[in-house]
Amino acid sequence: IVKPFFVRELIARVKIQFRQAQPPARPIQAGPLMLDRATCRVTLDGKPVSLTATEFRLLEFLMSRPGVVFSREQLLDAVWGHDRAVTDRTVDVYILRLRQKLEGENESLSFIRSVRGFGYSFNEDPVQSARQPAAS
Picture 1: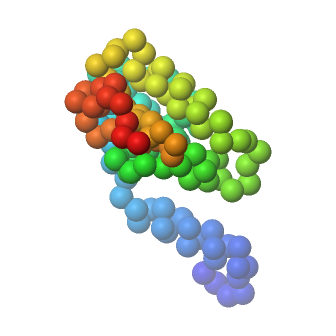
Picture 2 (picture 1 turned 120 degrees about the vertical axis):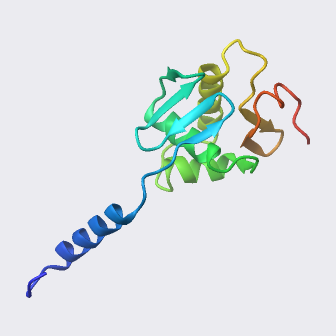
């Protein structure tokens, strides 16, 4: 950068360098479900699953931390951000939509586990843990 320079230009150039230096995001696989961060696509048994941007962010957050139980508040902060105009019941609606799109009528799959009184977690092995009641 040639002097004099603007701080905004410096920040923009540094951000570009960081983006270029990062390796491409690797897909996340859980049984028949694959989430590709680079292309923002989700497939189930090789078939594309149509998700909204928010559904994708929620699924990506859960899949990148399998087995960890998150409260509704934690999910709201992570997916919707701190400056949000939604309630904790919004998480329940989005979880329901994800379950419908990913599991449908297939009772042998259970990707998202409810933990009564606390929140949700992503199952690492959705086939093995299908429809098992969550521990309290």
